[in-house]
Amino acid sequence: MKKKKILGILPSYSAGGAEKIMLLYFHNFQKRPFFFKLFVQNKIGPLKTNLVDSIEHKYERFFYAIPQILSYIKKNKFNIVYSTFPHITLGLIITKLFRLHDCNIVVRQPNMLYPSLSHSLKLRVLRFFYLRLINIADIIIVTSVAMYNEAVKCKIKKKKIFLLPNPLDIKSIRKNVIPERKKGEEVKLVFVGRLTYQKGLDRILSLFSKVDNVELTIIGEGSQRKTLENIVKEKKLQSKIKFCGFIYRPYNVIAGADYLLLPSRWEGMPNCVLESLALGTPVIAFKDISTLKDLILNVKNKTINMVKNEESLLRHLKNLQPRKDKLNPNLRESLLNDFLSEAAYRKKLDKFIFSTL
Image (cartoon, rainbow, N blue to C red; front, side, top):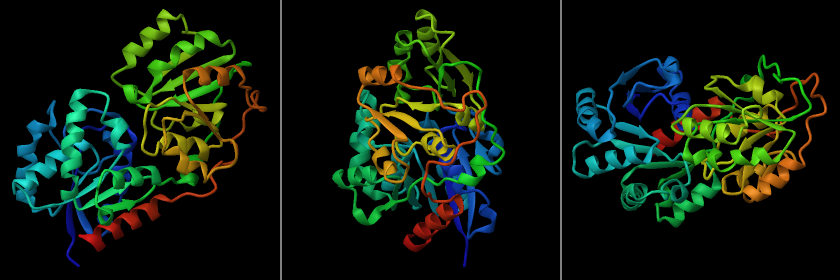
């Protein structure tokens, strides 16, 4: 069988979940029935070391990279383009509409559409055109039942929607993990993710001035870091909240914590929650993350604690207790009943692509 030629497109080497999932899918692609190249719009980000074969171009806006992408598609005769960000997907769809390329378009939808494309006029305009043109794509991958239902409600054709949850290699995550925890009687919380508006840290940091026995470790980088650090400084919370920057495998810290905190305004299927549960660390999250309702069915009781708003979170924080083995923490049992392995994920996505296109 002749190998299909796939061009994956990312805006950067950022350590977000969408980037990780794309890179995971194309891992060991040499042994599978397709040829793959990755086009990266901007060569910044910590995941660069994980890539085997990529083309880098430095553009502040994706619009300026389109001529180079189209030229590269034509020159190398790609027949599939794989995208996971709405603005990139829309660019690929519009250029196909004007017959500037004839590739099949595979889209992995990273977040719920309405909340993720609603908090600015620019994003609402993007959503307007995206929803009217998305059916030109050939495959739309969603990661939860909530996202599937939203896609159907948005009149995306059912035959093009494929439900494929994010994969999780539980054994790999737990391998060689030694829980890391500072001494003290305080409840230890950890946040893992990009420091952006989506993740919602800006709305909860001030709450830590109203609780006495809770500490928060923040792992990640992003555009809001300076703003968040200023909040911590203004509220004099430096002793309670620590910024650690990006950590490639933060599993020791997660495993040693009492809870993972996720105050996001919206999510797709957050990898940090899956990883935390795999390490035995329960989760506190906002009910805004409707996609977690799928996950609750696949975890042990009371391991995902959903709070309604900031006031509800504050009440919850005041009642938290540290783990029983806080003085000498052990790696706890996984809280996930079962999950799709990375190998099974790649196999399923291969099947979607090669049976459909």
